[in-house]
Every structure is written in structure tokens, then in C-alpha cells.
Image 1: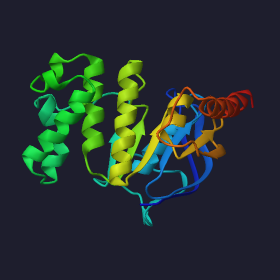
Image 2: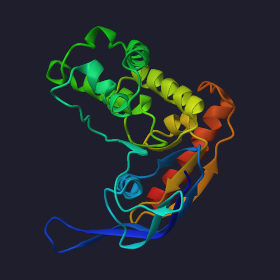
Image 3: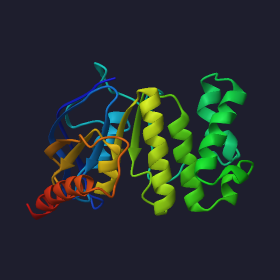
Length: 252
């Protein structure tokens, strides 16, 4: 699936009802099938707003968002969405939450469970497979929600800062799992983050937004070889270059 975003602008009315806030202005972007693209930029620059437009949760004031040539008018099972805050089914245990989408898709139960346990092992949650959401910490709930989205077979995955609340070790494990899953399944991933190092580790392309009203300031092609080593000079130089571009956006 290829996303085509043409001349998109989006605004909101402030809570007091007196001010128009322009979140995005004249966004033009094409994301090719199978790419891993990260959105970075100053806080409030419209990254999450664009992600929600791409899912069909909201609609642009001007312009169009198309997914594989079709106008996006509503959410789709072909597009998975991970929110910043965990969203689990309270009546299902951890394992059943993780394999929920696979069950709906009619996948063999034992195969789904085997896949789920592999991911739960990776983030230290195998022993919590029979626990319910109310028995988990916030970080655990978020890990479960992330795993559930990663193992589902949607063609596109839209991710809104999913790892921001996790400790560094768990975050790195999930990043590695996400990249591995992406490479096996040839899916498209669009990932919002404030962490430039995370974007450099994950992405094929990094889209840098200006401060509000959000515009696309620059698109970086990420040619760092995979698997990526965060400790190399090449990696850190790329992180610094993108960070400098964001800092310039904040000063505009």
C-alpha cells in the first residue's frame, strides 16, 4: 500500500472556542509500500495529527489522504494503529489480548499462541500470560498492546510514540523485534517519535516537521546498514544531523 498525502491542512478550535489552531499546513508526502518511515519534530508540530488522518480517525480541512489509491474515509483492518496509551480488553488475559486479532483473522490457535509466547518471552512477560490487565503495571500493559499490534497481519502499522514510556532495555528489545517483524512481513510502518536515535535505528526515511503550523521541512533517506549499531560514529553523525534540523525548526 502506498500512502499519498496531497495538500493536506488541518486545524482545530481551541478549548475556549475562541482561537483557531492550525496543526498542519500544506502537507505533501508519498510513502511507498514496505517502507519504514519515522515522523520527528518539535512538540505540537502535528505528527500525531497526520497519523490520525492516515488511519481515518480524523479528516483534513483541505487536501486528500489516499491509501493504495483509495481515499481514506474511515479506519481499516488493513491499517493497525498503536496509541501512546495502552488499550487492552479488560475481560481478556494477556495471551488472549495478544492473539485477539489473529483469532479474528481465523489463524490456527496453537500457531498464534506460539508466536505470542515468542514475543512475550522477549519482553519478560511470559509468566504473565494468564494475568488480566488490572493485574499489570502501566509499562506491562503498554508492552502487551505493542506486541498485539506487531504480530497482527495488517499491511500497514501506524505507531504513535509506542515505546516512550518503556525502560531503555525493553525499548531496545521491542525495536529489534519490530524491525525483524517488518522485514519478514513486508509491511509499511509509519512511526511517530521524539527520539531521533530511535528514528535512526528503525527507519528507511525520516520526515522532519517544522514547529506549528506543521509543515514538512526535510525528508532524510536513511542508508545506515542493517543491522544497525548505535555506537558507531556513522550512526551518531546521522543522529546529530537530524537533531540539528529539528533544533533549527524550533528556532524558526
